[in-house]
Amino acid sequence: MQTEGRGNGSAEAAGGPATAAASGASSDAERSIADIIAVATAEFAEKGLAGARIDEIAERTRTSKRMIYYYFKSKEGLYLAVLEEAYRGMRGIEATLDLEHLPPRQALRALVGFTFDYQRANPDFIRLVMNENMHKGEFLKKSPNIRALNAPAIDALRDIYRRGLEEGVFREGLDPIDLHISISALAFFNVSNQYTFSLIFDRDVTAEDRVAARRKNVEDMVLGYMLKQNSFS
Image 1 (cartoon, rainbow, N blue to C red):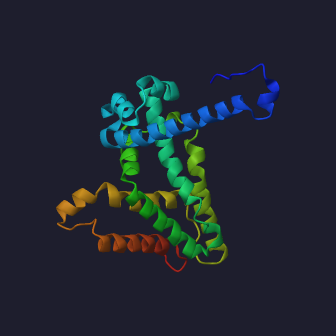
Image 2: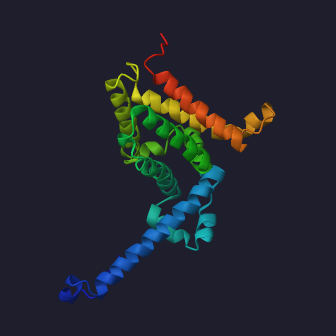
C-alpha cells in the first residue's frame, strides 16, 4: 500500500489526508476480500476445489483475477481462506451464546440446538467440510489458524461438562472432544443426507415439523447420554 505525503509528517501525525486515504484504502481492501470470500464460498461449496473457477468468482465480484491472486496468492489459497472463514463464522456466533451463565443442562441444550440450527441454515458449510474430507484434510492441514479457531468450541463444552460434574448432573468419564464429535455428527448428518433419506424412506425430512422433532431428539440423545442416572456400562 502506497503512502502519500511522506514529507508532511505533522499532517499525518494529526490524522491528515494521508492517514484518511490509507484508512479508506484499507477499508476498501477488507470489503473486497469479504466479497470475494462470500462468492468463493458458494462457488467452492457447489463445485468443489477442482470445479470452481477463479474467472467466475472474479466476474461475480466485479474484480479481477489479478486482484484475487494478489490477496490470496493462488486458487488453493482462496479455498483455504474460505474454509477458515466458514469455521470462524460458526465459532463467532457460538461465542455469543453466553453458555457459562446457564445451568449445565440448559447450557448443553443451547449448544446442541445452536449446532443443529446453524448447520441446517448453512448448507454451504456442510458441503465445504464434506469436500475437504474428500481431500483427506489436505488443505486444511496447511492452516496455521484452524486449531485456534475451533479450540473455543471444545473449551465451552469442557466447561459445561465440568460444571455438570460438580453439580452431580453428568456422569464421569466422558471426553469433551468425543462429545463434540457426536454433537457435530448428529447435526451434520441431518443436512448432508437429507435428500437420500427423503427419497429412500419416502418422507420429507425437511418439513418444519419433522425438523423441529429431530432437533429435540438430538438434544435429548446428547443430554440423556451425559446424565448421571444413565448407565451405559
